[in-house]
Image 1 (cartoon, helix red, strand yellow):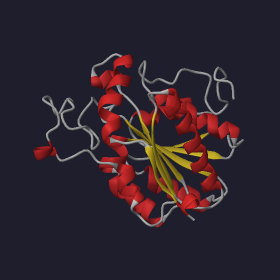
Image 2: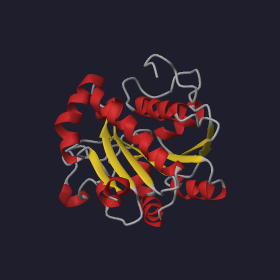
Image 3: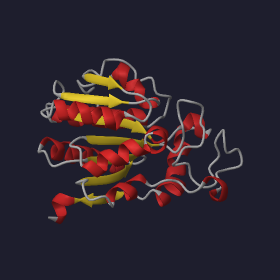
Length: 247
């Protein structure tokens, strides 16, 4: 697909994300894959509270808004009642790894046949830049003004590592969106996850490392460097589980 062509799965409008935010790129990649699979009229996007909710405005297909953290529970009901649909959640780290932790772990443990797209920018982006479960040690936020301290707030949660040890998930992978290679790898991973779902294989989980220029207090270019030196060494990109390859 040409890089300059807007996916038909997106509305002809701006995304609403802050300038330089990789949420927009993540959304674009998902839309590209859905177009390539010719599933625009068959896909259901389940979003929760946070920046991901902007998909309610920009997505051209079916979108369902859920309560904070409850997107996996809603997706479970949607997929079970309409198993022929391509069902995926699009969630941020504050939503998925905090209030929604029980929901995501339970859905993964049951092996529900839908896909999770997890945008990890290490902050509560929409609500003011508070510390999220994935905020790095030493990373400043509006609730950790001097940087996150492991002794008082614990360590950043690594969701791919947690989910990959469960028996039921069939594909778990993490990609960084701050480089062309990372973007291309992410698109391939998203496509594989969707194809596995459509084949009825089970639960698939894609983590996308993103940025937040607004709440990190940086210009967009500096956030890409920050990801290289801080985010990626802790949240290592890679395929954490691939039942198809291991079979």
